[in-house]
Image (cartoon, rainbow, N blue to C red; front, side, top):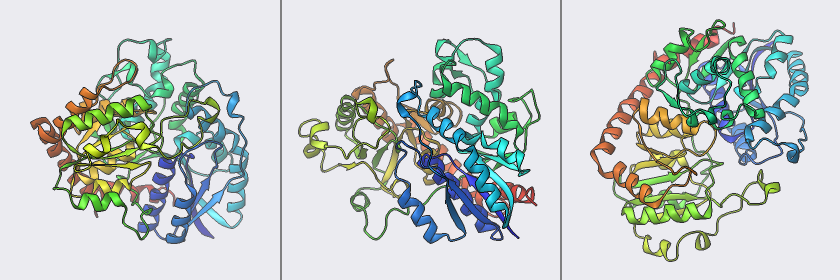
Length: 470
């Protein structure tokens, strides 16, 4: 019987892409396995995954996508403001389907391992029931893993929510984290999302191992704290496998060269500031205007991906926004005044291709882990502007621990003024501080290449992971 590795990502585009890259990595170095990826169709917008799945299916036939039956969720019945609550609940309700699918696959194949996204914690019990080794694939970094592993201990030591604590949180192996910068869905301990993350924290040590999309040199201090058992003093820590950085190629390009890449060809080397904020990163109309003013005043060349503001209608908050009306959203005359040094793109740009273009010299990012790794592997210094999920936490790590970014400072309500945008754009592209960050990111770029090469730490970790399945 053939050996199958089943991957079970959560529905978000970033989570799916990372999991597919893990599947490709396993097949590249251990082609005797087949990969089956479970797909959950959510009743809310996570970015369009269907074209991506179709492309992967045609280019990598050893990866099969298995669509689990659709579960209906009454979106209006959720009081939690966090997207993550819906995701956890959707995946919990899918346990029956996961069980049936694994039993069906087991009839013709040997399931060597089930690899689950951390949102899919509920599937751990299914794997145990079927005596299948279950591993977590943690799609953020090791610092974030240390934080979630330690959450159970923090929970026992305080009765307050993070949002009520005007203090720093001390987590083994990490710099002090302001309580308000902890991951957004765990700020309020009365929120259902907090409960789900606490449950995940409790179950992490019960897995056969944790795979992390990082490399040892990048997060050495946090990894040592996890491996030494400091982040989870209550139970033994499972093996940690750092197999990254895994970067997805932009295979959405097709035949035609996007306008933005052609435009970059005509710009001087390392002169362009790239602004892009992830598949769910949306700004108010007021904030978009402020970004435009800041960019214009900075005098820097820029490539800016603009999405429509979030829908005011609460019943439509989980739907994909339409393409933006730039004339309506941006200041009068802005596009005309900046046309010689700036380009505004609607909704999407091929981020990996842009970051790797020699004209790009800086990146204003929402601090999503995939984006952070893409910039690092392209050697592009960053300005950290977090928007959702664990991104404020990532900003602290990026700025304080890794020294790979400048922080974008917001007002108390989260608004960022044009003067701050202007200041950070100039600082990154022109100052000694920006130069220092560029130098540090080049060091890490080389370390990432070494980790992924033959005999490198990430390649060795992958080999150990696969050996644990035999």
